[in-house]
Image (tube, rainbow, N blue to C red; front, side):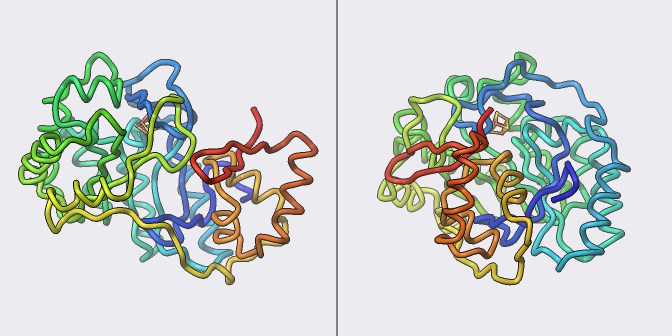
Length: 309
Ligand code: SF4
């Protein structure tokens, strides 16, 4: 938590206890998704740069691994699109040389049409690209991409990636009520899944506050209907439930602020990641709230904490 580009390990629904690594600052992204948890993208970007240099990231990961229990996974992401970091290939290779902990990359998949980026990701153990739309109109409504990124280019880039990438691909489809949830959409998604051939398809929906207020979560029964249409490769992402008691950190308020500055969390999320009982955490959160460092937002029947701007 002392370093500025790594955080956690945080409980991930897909990756277990995941050490998060930010490869881009907020909000360097090629998309402006309506469901983004980080908030709107002021200006979409496609230019690659060493937004956070390889040496900085590698030194921070190495220092963490030296001083802490190994996480389940090291996840390259950030408050935007990590493949925009032109050092990502070197970062993956050097982390792999340092540790046996699997390396995952969370990407929006928009730039996989670029052969250099496909090559950069080659050494990752698992790549988790988004694929939220099955036609250009839906793509524009949900992902609001940079003007240089077309739907066909994005989708064919993902097909091309599968042809050369030897690791696991876990595709994520984020469902927004009223936009991409019909049976007809599910059948079109199924056609793209057949072309991309991911190892898994994760079905997700809005369980946290989103960039646009009118993004409505899909019901569990609708996700089940879609899953059944997509076939055995598809699974609904389930809430995290692993015991975290070994990862206590005494400086809990600092940890809470670091976690919440990256994504909103419920009390249960925070208890899972810190290993601190929720009744104790409530006292710290009350203090942070009184000090105007943290505030709460209701989403559905849950309350999320996040850091005040
Ligand atoms: S959800 Fe991901 S891809 Fe979409 S705008 Fe946010 S950071 Fe970018």
